Length: 308
Image 1: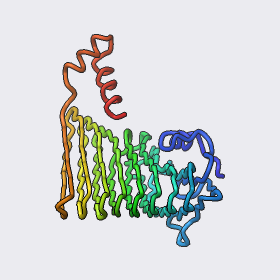
Image 2: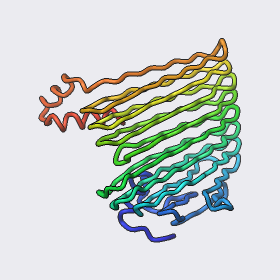
Image 3: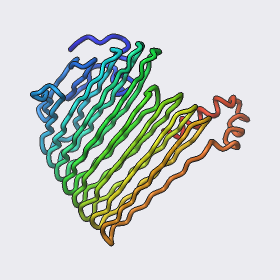
């Protein structure tokens, strides 16, 4: 394994909660190259022949195992596109931890575009965690454009935790999912933008099988002059249930756009969308200030609780 410096180690802690080499299967990518890789008896990680990414094969019936595939970038001006394909065998139950941290102290933009494709086998269960983080005092931007494509077989389930709390200047997150009968998708997005940052999240879920379901919820805070767009489309093509929700706090001169999209193509498709955008209530601030907090501390306390 390539030795990581202190900045790279800090980024790993932020995006993957890694304080040491993880147990189980992992691939750590640093500045465009693999800094370490390990497979297990049930999980095989292999580089694509063209060098553009990884193939991750998880054997049928694998239980209580994890895969870590974080990316860290500290080289200003580096731009890369990486394709990672996950093949989750029938009946497997695994946790996959991804994420990207960029520390840019230079004048050039740094950018990572990660395309993750999931092929979730029948009755398999996946928990997927993807965290984004940016730091560094350079003039160059920190840009992350993740694409997630999910194909779910009958009776499978996938829970996705998408987190971006600090330091990413521009992001365009695209998530597409196709669900067969009885498949279940749950998405929980947490997002905070500040400064002049821009963040776009677009979800398109096709509920194709009887009894399939999707629950896509975003919680976000837009501070300073930042901009956010939440675009969620559910297509009910069979007897199914679907729910999307955007719950946002707007501050300063921030801007938030919520775009619901519900498409019912079957009489028994039950689809719901909810959206709420507003500022922090003054009485919440006052209540916390009576407990000894400053106004700024009260705001931070409310935001932290909201984004948990």
